[in-house]
Length: 137
Image (tube, rainbow, N blue to C red; front, side, top):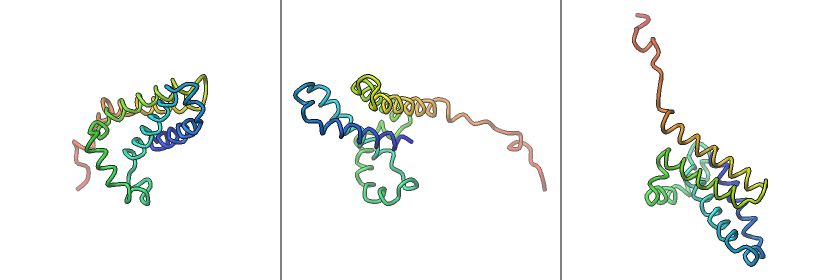
């Protein structure tokens, strides 16, 4: 699901970067949109798995391993969670009032919170009685 959010960030950020006149009107928002596109590409690379899109995974697996080597925090659930929350705040705050960037930003923040939840509380498993009592021959 975060792969879709990263793709949405890239698409929305690219549309904002293509508005060259914004660079003269509000240069800080233009620079932030460039960062949003870059961070969206990093999200797409880190969330790419061979099960989801195998035809894209094979040619990009070398770049993905390079990103994982240089940004080791993105290989952990808590690191990805904090990164997605950061991305979401950037997108929501630079998206204007109730624009598409705000919706994508909130989505990325929810994905980040989900990753943090999985890191801290997702590993708790319940052991059923069948694990303790052998049933059958």
